[in-house]
Length: 208
Image 1: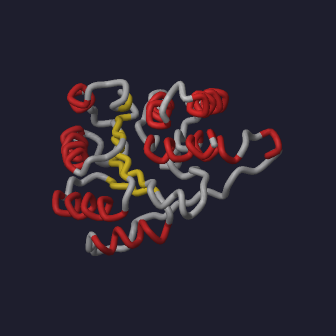
Image 2: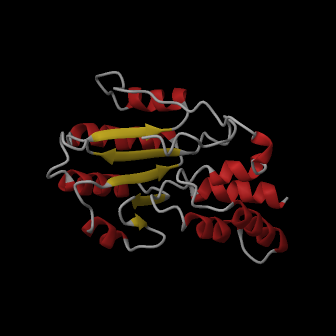
Image 3: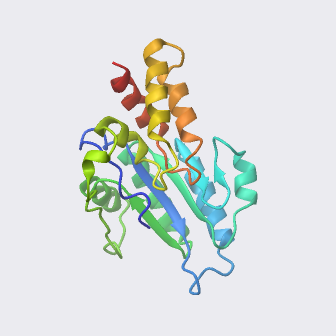
């Protein structure tokens, strides 16, 4: 999947940003895969993610988690977001033991993700490695780098740049805490791959 590849940032502020998700392959193993997706969500939830979602239904900031799990389909793509490498390794270890029979994808900086795979004692090299080549074209029309670090955490572009600037302004004025503003920004990201903890830290920097 490519929607989680384009997160902008520095090596330092991307150290607390990892997306783990499960998906089936249409026409290959999608039929009956809903149970595997629900099992994935149960495993992921035990490790206290900061966001979860199903791109068919939405994220847990807009939907009750039980309802999300109840609506999982064979064609769902389910996501969980974590903020530290040790947790990612534990999630991968449990997923390896569960052997769900669907694709598991981890999005993050290459070296830390590789370390998590090694800690989970995965027996095989990753099937595929994808990476972003950045943004090409008339980049002068892009929002500021600070805004892009937040907006690109929603891979489908559902978080408006102006909303991010407004939330930073409200944090600056003391109308909202950085955590409250980050939660508001997490809601439009239907898939649930937005990292509200990282967003709060970035909003504090913007507000300063």
